[in-house]
Image (cartoon, rainbow, N blue to C red; front, side, top):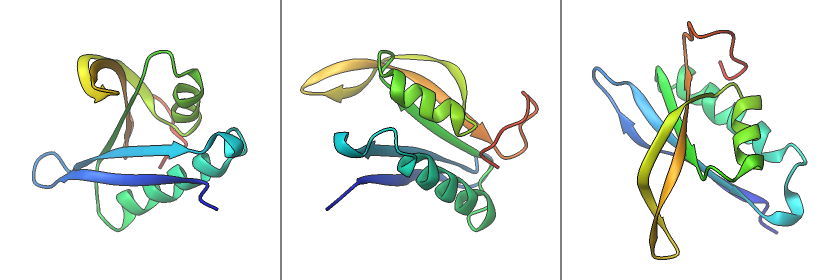
Length: 111
């Protein structure tokens, strides 16, 4: 049985040293800590092995569970992006979050 999936893609080297986090969890497994643990492991790997400085993530504004997960994982809200991704054939606005390796915005649990 698959619990969910997590990706770190769009890895950018050079001046950016950043990547984009994506994830989903099957409904029966939500709110059990699986994805929070997976995010922590991917962020640790991204900072340690890949030497990234910034990890970005986005979700739908109304997805309170995902927003809470990102915030509990040390990501901070950065703003909104109009027509960010297509979902079900239509462009959807998303809210943007980021975790920084050396976060001067306040302590983060992600690093």
